[in-house]
Length: 354
Ligand SMILES: [Zn+2]
Image (cartoon, rainbow, N blue to C red; front, side):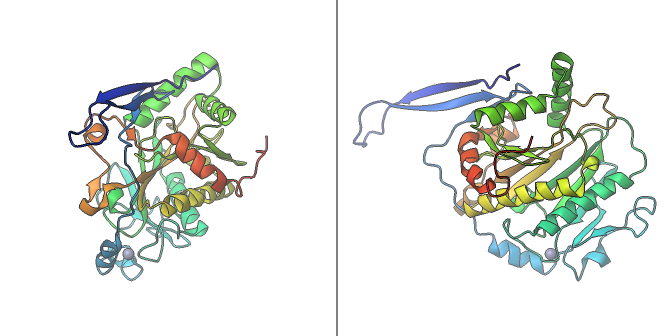
């Protein structure tokens, strides 16, 4: 079985500006790709003259400090409490992580996890303990929920900093339990079931093995995780995909597995920070509860968010993504994988244990 990584270059020809020294026609390309699982398209395009410029968010950080509900002097006074059946103390606390209900819920079970005592940490400043405790507190929450119906997903997301949609500067995860996680995850599950029925092994295994063998988008493999960049990324500068082999659910993860994920996440976040990324989205994609076959692998995407032009706060979410649902990448996933590979090597030295 070979996965299909379909792509097509499209050339656009135009004439130079009237005053330009060059008079020959100019030829530029864009590339249309299709995701090997969903068949959905995305583009590598719009990259002429692109350079990543870090926005200065220091004023936003300072101005948000005084009224921040997640800072230590306020959080236990102003945040609501979970029902006793879920958390007898009303909150789940683990290290610096504090988990409490979302006052503006997205579904029946919808919580927020504040990650740190510090009001602001840049992406390269989170400690392994802060990130692991946030994830483990969320996992503890999912495990404590009263028996959920078949087809329920446990989802953790992170909108880090306002350009990525955060409404608070103070770092926090969101966790939800839902049977409607959105079309992308629902479609991944449908296609992944179909792949299992046809090929009797998980699509995700095929993806990890194919990418590792070809190497173009493969970043690293550890004991519990495999890291690559998706052929069709949703971030304009491409993103990181972490696969958890033979794990379908967040609730299955051991603290060792979480620790390995966090170690890789810190490497990726440091690399993004270094090049000027100051905001990102993260999401975990888990199987619906009580799936009958082991067709699905839990995975996570870490997706940088940038301003195309920080001077005018020019968002990276354009009509292409927002209204046509067509992601485009100004940096290819292959270029991002190349950049990350050396940074991951000290963490997961090759060869990968079989
Ligand atoms: Zn704060």
